[in-house]
Image (cartoon, rainbow, N blue to C red; front, side, top):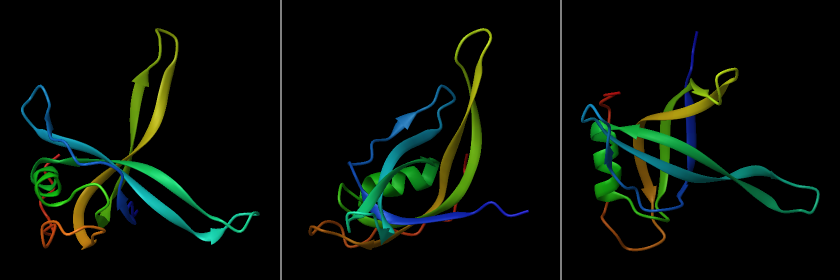
Length: 121
């Protein structure tokens, strides 16, 4: 079996590091990804995809990438279960980024967002 996703797009906000109760570093980012085809009105629509990054990967992106940075994120989809109430549980897909590659930037910021291969979640 194979569970791998690659997204290329721009960060919609500056990454912010948080810590879990167990001390792990995490950041949730949103990547604006343009579709490869036009809609009925002749416009390329954009999807805004949430992504979770852990530990060293989260640190690297928060230090080197900002809103507007063009990045590629390789990762996997996983199902998270949320308890809506006592009778109902909701399954949601979560995109977990495992490697981030800096591609370009709309502004002059840091020269690169280093590749990160550590998978610490």
